[in-house]
Image (cartoon, rainbow, N blue to C red):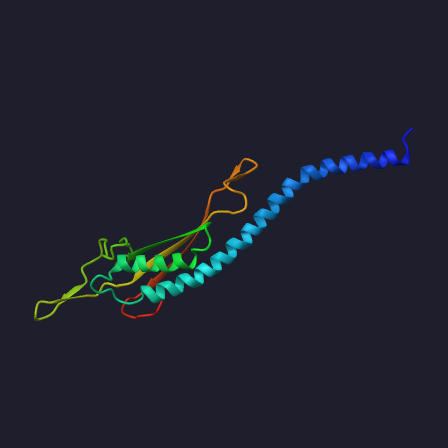
Length: 177
């Protein structure tokens, strides 16, 4: 016959086993929730700082050595310095120039594509291009979850990428489209 104290000891033993099973699951849920909140906060900060970096460094015409490639480096270094404290974040910036048919060229700043000929020639033989000169800067934030390392209970974590694109017209300095 069991005594009153024996039943309570059995219940405590069962609760210990349940607790041992539940603690890793609770830790994983808490870790995911914390990483989600940190990621959302970093994304909001990245969106704000990315728009400012593109507006400050890229939203004016490039002359001489300050062509599109130099402006991409300037935007990337400015964003990189803003997020240098967090080792779980990395920033990448790319630029492309739009053309008439909507296709894009890459970071060299030259418009490529098979658009129609929209050059008009005047009496002196000079040409004037009616192609749009918009450039699109694509800023990417790569986030690696922190607190777990590369894996947690055999589950490997890969990074999450948050991407924003900003289109500028170099003839309207300081304006994002």
